[in-house]
Each structure stands twice: as structure tokens, then as C-alpha cells.
Length: 261
Image 1 (cartoon, rainbow, N blue to C red):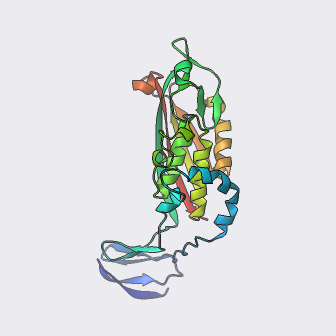
Image 2 (image 1 turned 135 degrees about the horizontal axis):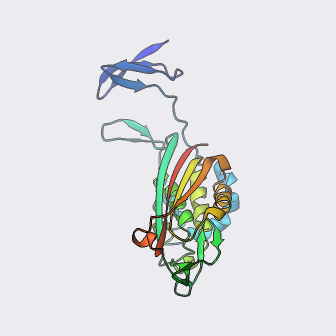
Image 3 (image 1 turned 120 degrees about the vertical axis):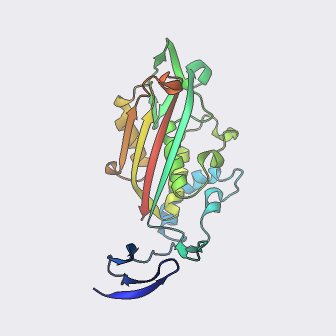
């Protein structure tokens, strides 16, 4: 096995395996990992071409307060940046992880002005205390789509869904939340990433969603341009505790891991 001496700003000189070997070199119980160099991101790559189908729809989304570039305005402007310790670090790592969470109140369908949509599925009317319920929201209030959108945006280091699609903008009144996920996916692919896996946890006392999870998963797989083996959707109650357990609200957590494509 071939090694070379490398000067490290914190631990001094270490013997490090040559880059073509994914091995470890040890010194003073510290580990230096040899990794292949990260390929610089080409912003005029195939990902621009592949996403042309979304351009027309996304143009309307990008015409708001953030200007024509919207999410793109927050993209890194160089392949590397220098950390406070002087180390030069790639701005686009091989993997990224994001977390999203959303919660919405539930009221009578009459007060809410709409029914309940979760994962792109319109849930059949359900009752709580003899009242048919609906989701209170500026858009359609899809907690699964909202949390997944935020997880993607968070993994990319971009503004959250409330900043890109503010709830005081009349364009999003009653909007189909698939538009928000579409835009997040467009930005993800523009940055040169794809979904590695998605793990969703719905937390709600009502409605019961076991019969609808397969359709929800199918929708998420389609929108994220991935395969069923990379998406998981779970649901649990809140054991009748607080507003969620009392069926006055519903929520969703989503974890997303993405990889360079």
C-alpha cells in the first residue's frame, strides 16, 4: 500500500493513503480518510436540459418577492469555500441530508373551506365529534408534501417553503402543493443531486390513512423522480395527547437524503 506525508493544520503531519485507495491512515489515535476528489459542479450540465419540462410552470413560482431566480439566488457561487480554519471545502458534498416538519389545524370542513389532502390524496370525508373535518391552510394544507418540500430545500441549504411560497401571496390560495414539491425537485436536480432515500412519518389521530399510504407513496415516488424502494411512508397516532391527539391538528416529519447524480 502506498502512502504520502500530508500536513494537516490541526494534527500536524500524517501519513495518508494515496487518493486511489479508499483506506485509513492513523496517527496519535486520529484518523485521516482518503477520499476521491469531488467532481466540480457544472451549472450548465444535463440537469438543466432534463428539467426543461418544469421551466414554464416554475417561471410563475419564481416571479415573486425573491425575484426571477428565487431558489437559484441562494446557490453557491463557487466550487469551494474557505472555512474559518483555512481549509478549502467543496460547496457540493457527495451527500446531503434534510429534515422537514409541518403542522396544520383542522376545523369543520365549512370553516376550513376545504377537505383534507395528504400526500396528494383527497381523503374521504371523516368526522370528529359528529363534524366533518377539513384542513385549515392557505394552500391545500398537504402536510406530507410541505414537509418533504422543506426537507429537500433544507438539504440544499435553501430558504424554507414559507419564504419561497409565502402564505400572504394570493397566488398560493388553495394551491395544489405538488407545485411546491416540483420546484424543490427542480432545484435539487439543477444542483446535480437525486433522491437517495425519503422517510416520512405522519402523526395524526384522524383521519385514518392506512388505506391511502400506497397511493401517497406512488405520488411521492413520481414527483421525486425516484423508485419505490427509496421512499417510505409511516403513520402513527398521538395517543390522544394535545391538539394532534384531540384531532384538532395533524403533522408530518420527513427526512431526505440525497446523492450526487
